[in-house]
Length: 245
Image (cartoon, rainbow, N blue to C red; front, top):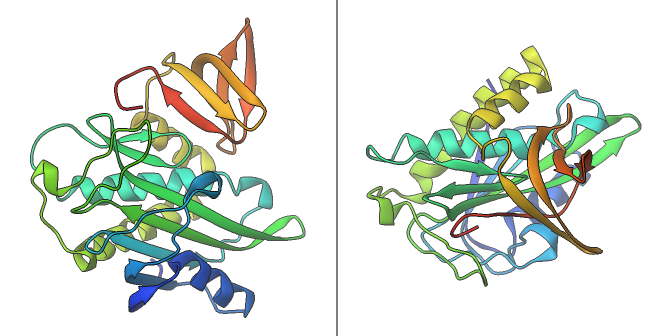
């Protein structure tokens, strides 16, 4: 199990930026940073991540002994860890759903997101920073997206409680990756995700592609079925054909 060294701040511009700086300075794995407020949080694809006080703003530094080609599996691993952690606080009802590559949904609305920063060392990973944001009590507006909170589903918990649960869950999934490899992570993610065959649109810088979800590559890329072919998608925003996607 990872021995996390949790540092708490009242305010930081970005927990992930703080961890990245420490990683570049040579800080060992296990650093975890919690901020009550972020003033310059980062989301996926260069977006600003709104972080109202009371929500979870957490980043961790890991130095996994894995090939650089496996970097993509860590967004899936972190999503699994978050889904498992929040499920432990929810009363009976719908389970969290994973959406490729970095969202956790609850009743088709965004509950949490993951951001990965990574640096290679030749063919291996030097370090990874996993940033995690969970809407505990406030749901920042995201244009065109439904959002929700744990509080809205009957789970009134603090950022400290959420951080403890997420760190424990992360440790378990990092151990699973080390012991069994990425296939176990991929299979576990698929079991909690949108079903194979779900109609999807991939929105990227150079346009959109529509097809159906055909699974994941060995290293976590999305497989899109379209025009009687299977395409590998390494980046982009996935829109599910369901309410709140």
